[in-house]
Amino acid sequence: MARPRKDGKPSRNNKDGRPRKVIHWRKIDEMCAEFCTAEEICAVLSISTDTLSSKIKEKFGKTFPEYFTEKSALGKRSLRAWQFDLARQGNVRMLIHLGRAYLGQDDKKKVDPSSPDERENQHREYTKEELKAEIKRRGLHKLFNKADFI
Image 1: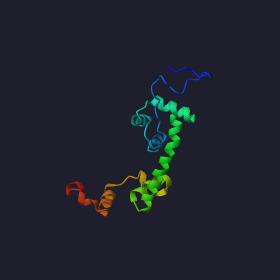
Image 2 (image 1 turned 90 degrees about the horizontal axis):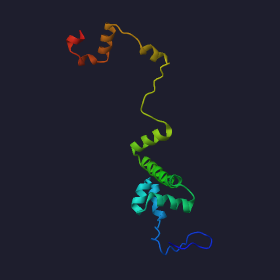
Image 3 (image 1 turned 90 degrees about the vertical axis):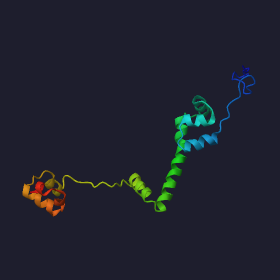
Image 4 (image 1 turned 45 degrees about the horizontal axis):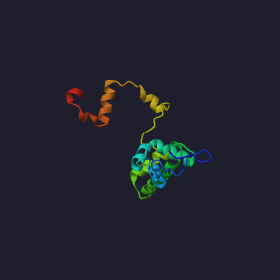
């Protein structure tokens, strides 16, 4: 075990212990920007999640979730930029997605049940003759057997 320094803290030279893990901060930042989990980051760097958490706390004074939130924001920004580039190139699916995500657009027709037309048709009862006339008007009578329709 390393001899403590005069100030009581452990020695940094680590002569008797195993080598300290080298932390590749640029790689961690890249993986956070790609929304990798702590477990995935640790697997790539061959370190434990405890080591990752303690090194982040030691260097930045943050927890892993705080650090991840900060670094993943860069990935979100890049992803959004790529989406807008695709939309500018005329990618219809991306235009639809961005319209839904940011402009509240959707494909569904909104029906106002309080409108007079909707209230009138909502619970109206039809006579047999009215139904037959409506079916013929819409050309749906071709879908039925004549015996069923008479």
